[in-house]
Structure formats: structure tokens, C-alpha cells
Image (cartoon, rainbow, N blue to C red; front, side, top):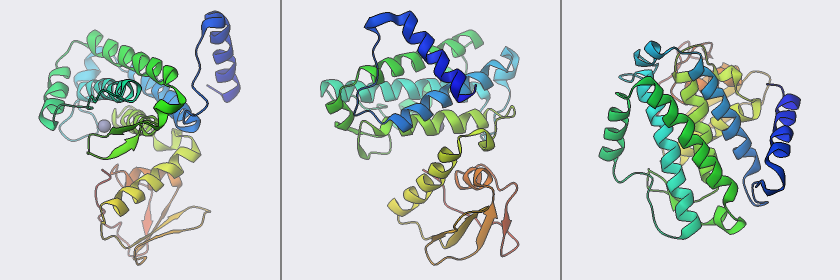
Length: 258
Ligand code: ZN
């Protein structure tokens, strides 16, 4: 959908909802929420292109069917909803009780019938969006904890969701591509990977050279890897090295994203 038709659709929705409709609070992270909502629509579109049988075929993630991915993306929305409830009420509710619980939930979810999987994705997404819309200015700054154990303001959930829906839409493996992502999101994904490496003090020497842009020097520089921003973002987030060239002739090994 073009920006103008998206805006028109949103305006039409507001009109239908009438005066009681709620909007994001002024302190909400507008850019990240817009990415998350567009990405949710993108994931939904790729999911709708798949017939029920195709859901149980392999995704691009090793060991995961598409059903695993849909379950994971649905349960991720529920987990982020718990963080927003925590921000709203002050009552600590973690994303997941444990890694084992998270993994078991995904494994069980992957065995659900197609209709249940599609409903899980749709309902969890709506619930998260309602929580976001109702969160107050103070709530967006309240501290919550990520699944990795980091304390972050609740506003971070919009970026966390953005990453999940866009990147996993590509992982569905039915034609989605980082080239479909908004250009400013491609840039932010590259920055996000570099920030994650810095936080973990990964020893990486690398120059990331997006076509027609200033190169980004990591550590001592090292090999220069060039390509489109989309292909570089895909590679840095662990989704292959297609379309890239390296000054050493070989695209180097890099640490995981998170
Ligand atoms: Zn994920």
C-alpha cells in the first residue's frame, strides 16, 4: 500500500471508530510503532499468500517449519503485551517464564491446526496494539526486562516487535526480501546489529560499505564488505551473504545478532 492510501485507510478507520477512538500517547515512539505496524501488515500479507499445507513446510530458519515461525511471532506479541502490562501496572510480568517454557510453547504451537495458527497471529497482534495505544506517556518510560535480561524502557517493545515481524516475514521463505523494507528501517537494522555486538564486546574488524553511502568502520576496519543496504542488513542479521562483495574475496564470518 502506498503511504497516501495507508493514510486514507487510517483516516477512514478513525471516522468509523468515532469520537471514542484512542491514539498513541505523545510520548510513544512514533517511528518504531509505524515500522511495527507496517511490518505486521507485511507479515500478514506473506502469511496469507501461503495455503494451509505450506505452513508445515520448512521455513528459512534451520529446524523450523513456517508453523514454528507463525507460532513464535504470535507468542512474541503476547510476551511483549506482558511487558506493556508490566509498564502499565508496575506488576512484574516477564516475557517468558524461562527459555525452556518459551521453546516448549513454540514447539507446541507449531503443531496447531492452520486456522488456530492464523488466529493466534491475528489476535495476539491486535491485543498488543491495543496495549500500545492505551499506554500513557509515563508508561512508555517505565522499565521492563527483555528476554535477554536487559532492563529497557517500555518504548523499546516497538523496536523489538519491528525486528520480529519484518525479519521473520522474510524467514517464511515465500518471496519476502529485505529490499521490501523501508530504507530507514534497513539502516536501523544495520545499526542494531552493530550496537548488539558492541554491547557484548564482540571482537569484530570490518568495514560495512553500503552502495553510495559512507562506509561504517567496525573495530580496526578489516575486510570491506560492499552491497546494497538491504543485502548488508540481511547478512548482518544472519540471513546469508547474497549479493555482497568482499575486499578479501570472501565474505567473512560474523557473530550472531542477538
Ligand atoms: Zn524471533
